[in-house]
Image 1 (cartoon, rainbow, N blue to C red):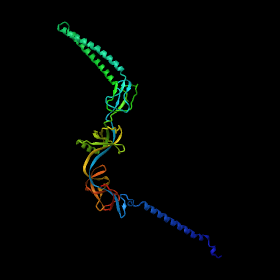
Image 2: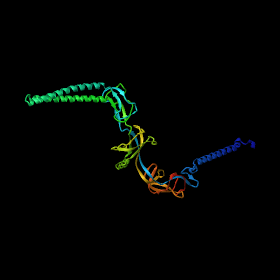
Image 3: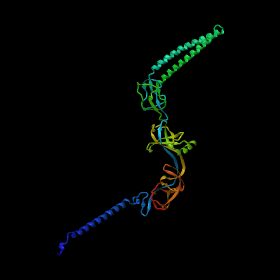
Image 4: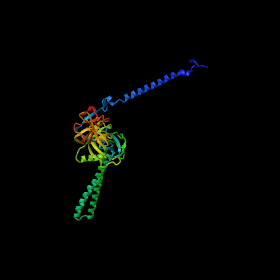
Length: 397
């Protein structure tokens, strides 16, 4: 049986269609790969095309920011966490027992030493005072009469009219009445003092807190909460801590007679609250933290510091005058020490080793390796190499 062209099997007719589909798949994959490559190139475009410091300019030029080495004063500042601590906090208590008849303060008000805060009913103590004064008057009369009798007996004894024993007995009676009168005077003084205690006054200048007892209550000297708490707020102190390795510097400055300023900042360390001076150091280190407590005094006339408030204390230890300085951002720390990139007149950078001293306020003192006016790179050092060409986008000189 012979086969004609019309009798060719159908799968031979579908072969060109399959080949066409395969080509379309390959072409699509190539287009997708090209799109991904273009996206990657666009995303990772060199920083120089973005125009920022440290970016690569056309022709291999780096973009950097520079600053000049300058002579300035550097303050040496030591910082530590602190707590506002009143110099005196007094729980005002009653020294006698009795009913509270008056509260003479408003919660939160400022009071002076000796100002009346509260009163206790004085009538029981006034009655006792009158009773003891009456007893004292009676005993005083007996003493006066005994002294007269003793005087008479001594006159008669000189005339041999009475026995010596009578004189001695009368002298002893006089001394007995003298002791009684002195005891009476002690009781009188006690009741006078109790009458003074009926008026409860402030022992210090400060601010009163919330009252701890209301009018009409019976108060005693054993009440632990007292009547009110008075806190001294002006002046006020800040207790803060410093690491033990900083203590010798502080002690040396104090022994030299220096007055060390202390500035208190808020919890965020951004807002200045008050200025004061260092008052004293604690007498021992805290072995658990390796720190030492220090106390600074603040006038606090504007009431900017509040008791138990958390603050950041900055101790102005010293000021280095006329130091050659550069920004701290310019200093590179490496295995061989510290170095900086110096920009020459041809806008090329050179890595130079330096020696540094004290630092503060964002600057560091350079003791060797630089001269005044040398320009150092402060931003964009990540891609720099010794001898690289740079383009200066920011100059802090």
